[in-house]
Image 1 (cartoon, rainbow, N blue to C red):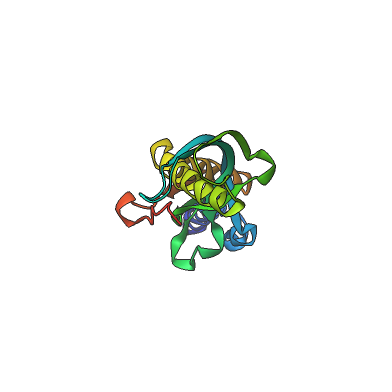
Image 2: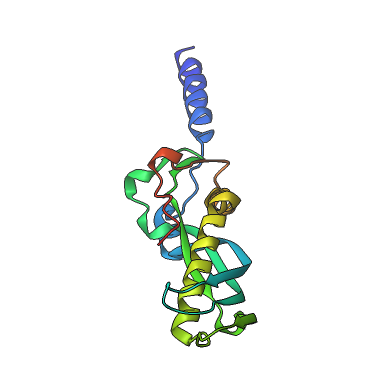
Length: 191
């Protein structure tokens, strides 16, 4: 009778050990090797109107109308994920995302056009330096529009989706991604 009890206990013990949850075998920090993950891209156009009435001693005025386009990419810098930002428990992985950022802002020179100029009186035509100043105003205006479009929020949502898919493909059943609280983000889009 003792042998039967021992065998029954041994079989229950062996069966319970066999049901152990398998943890996915993966290097969870390899995501950092992706580097900067651009997840959102916008092309924004702007028409810039500038009236240069000049100084009191300059007779006449001049006006210019320029059109330009900027290509903006936003995403997450995965290089900045620290070891403490990732935790694994069984088949569940939890990740704290770095804050989203503007990855690139390019004004394509081939998409900058002078649509109209009007110069009267004794004023000189617009120089390249004058046009560069007008384009600077256009860039500032586009950057302000980025805030209204919530580009950083969209970049963060897309990065979250990417990470969930990435780790589920690695064998994790549950992927929890925490976003950066909005009050801790650098939302300066003016640089």
